[in-house]
Amino acid sequence: MDVTEIWRVIREGVRYDIILVSLLFGLFANVVRGLRWGLLISSLGDRFKMSNIIYAVLGNYAVNMVLPRVGEVWRCGIITKYDKIPFTKLFGTLLIDRVSDTIVVGSITLLIFIFNFDFFISFFARNPALLEGFQKMFDSIWIYVGAVILVAGIWFVFKYMSNFTLVQKAKALLLNVWDGMKSIWLLKQKGRFLIQTLMIWGGYFCYFYITFYAFDFTRDLGITVGLIAFTMSSIGVAVPVQAGIGAWHFMVIATLVCFGVNENDAAAFALVVHTVQTAWTVICGLFGIVALPLTNRDNSKEELAVEKQ
Image (cartoon, rainbow, N blue to C red; front, side, top):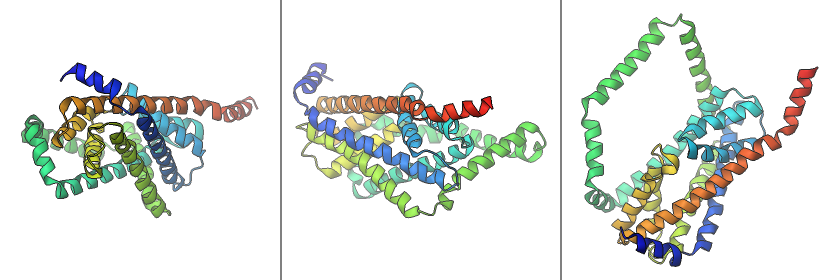
């Protein structure tokens, strides 16, 4: 790619005011994600401060920038610390939170596949190595052998070694996680959960699509192309690297190129949008991390007073 041309677009061809507006939708989506997680936790009968839940969700993404996927563990741990809810139950609700997101992305991808099949033909035609990589992964017999050995090993341990203390603790741990996962069935406000899920992903879509209007070469592509690019970028974020760096860029650039955008322009788009939005995510996350001990200072004082007594 022509680095000089990419730099020219970054300096002269971007409406940064529009990109800044898009950031509000990203924050909105993450706040609603906190409210939705709180809905799941409350169905288990546990009491908590909703501000803690929201700050933990924001901080989750900042922690993930240091170590991918560790933010989810940190999120549960910090709520256990401040609201005294068992970590394993929280982790169970977190699994439901993530499964619901996977269902949404999977559903959108399926609809795009059905109604925009030509795009996928073009995408894989331009990136044959990607399809070959998937095929090789599933052609390897060792994947299936490893899966069978893993399942058999787990079954053997829980069936014939159940008297061991470590196994009993593992069982208790899994049962607690399962209690957390049952939150979706115990949830009385399922309609509210669905509406919040739609609000989260509607916010994420606006977070991404509004940036199309910041560039001359994407503003006229239309909402359908925006939805396709957004979905492909969401798949890229699923890769366990910080903020999907590399994978997100590849998916967005490759998608825009399929719709006639110059490769250098597509690279400039990906670089600007991802950099600004990642910086925003880190800023909001750091705010959440700093706010948690400050807003729970009174709780710490009460605990200290109880200990002295």
